[in-house]
Length: 156
Image (cartoon, rainbow, N blue to C red; front, side, top):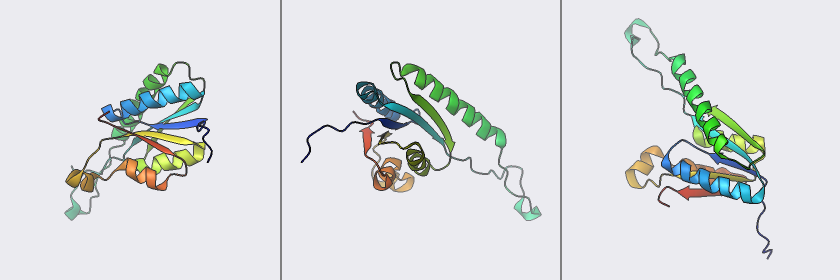
């Protein structure tokens, strides 16, 4: 058995600006700095659900999607990622990605596109009914990722 520690060169860190993901960011930063790894930060915006406000289905009017909402979310996402990347001092190769879609799928897709050899993310640690309703992004990523996944619990 090879006992040589793994050397990660391309670390993808997913963030959603929660306390859980802030802890994951810290772990990712420390690991990337120690290994001299490139870092990709990703924030995924879930698409806004169409609203029925002002739409009358009986009159054949469709639900409305307000594009400004998505634009504001994208702007906030890019701003958050820029702020985080400024704190990653000593990391020479850092890129940011703001994506719109299902978080688990966007993280997996980006990991493949960017050729990440490690994904780091936080978890809220939901159980029971909350877990059943909301699912677990980290659990889905772990099951389908083509590289190791480091999940940092929010309680640590």
